[in-house]
Every structure is written in structure tokens, then in C-alpha cells.
Length: 173
Image 1 (cartoon, rainbow, N blue to C red):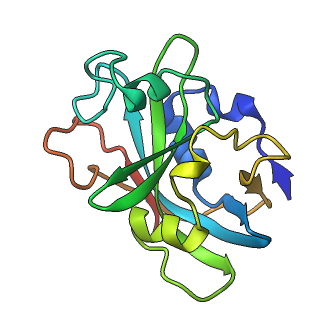
Image 2: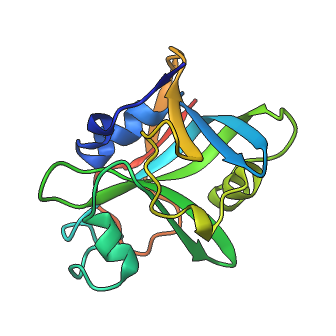
């Protein structure tokens, strides 16, 4: 398995989102290693995106993170659960990819369907915010084992009041 480099995340969020499908998310916490295959993601852009926290500039922790260095985790709470994003954008832009669902690999039991269940399954909380997923020493990483999804489907993002016309939710069908 190969660790994805930081340059992988230095592209538009929708391209990164598509390419994250089928990759392996790995977390290490308290001596436990957890792995799952990413099967559903959503892309978020900067100020041009009405569903993005960056739409009003750089005010607030989340908006600043969306403008920050690509390849860092962005963990924030919503509806009493943690959500995991990976910052992804070209230089001088903003954006991130929300990881919505994955298929369990290690341990094989569990239900990581939905962004809150994914973070619970992976043992990811606020303490894992702002970590580089491309760093070999990081407790949160994204790995490529060569798997390529057969069929990728697109739709509108889930739970957003105002969305772009471009479907930015991607999932393996």
C-alpha cells in the first residue's frame, strides 16, 4: 500500500473526491489500527459554493481550515457527531472533501455508513483535527492499494439547503 502524497490534494476538490473513492482510510489510536475503503464522498469549494463554510471568507476555524494547506484533516462537530474532511484545493483557493461512508476492512464488523458512523468506526474525534494525511507518522492516513472502483455514481450533496447545479456527491455503485 502506498501513502498518497500531499500533491494529490493540491487539486480541485471534486477531482480529489472522485480519486479518493476506493482508497483506504487508516487511523491509529491507542494501539488500535482501523482501516476502511472509502465508498462515498462530497466535494466542497470556496466562496463560490453556497453549501461551503468558506462562502463568507476566512472567518471562523472551519473557513480558515478550508483555505489552509491541502492534505490536512478537518474534523468538526455537527448534530452531536464528528465529521471528517480532508482539505483539498489548488493554490490560492479553498475546498475540502467530506468522507461520508466506507466499507470496513479492519476490523470487518461495524457500520461506517454515514459521516458520523464513519468517524466513530475509525475512532476519529476532534483531537485528530489538522493532521497531515500524507505524513507517514500521522495517526490518520489515506493509502492506495491499487483498487479501482468499477462504477461511480453522482448526485447532489446530502443535507444542504442551497447547492450548486453540479452534482458533487460521488459514490461507488
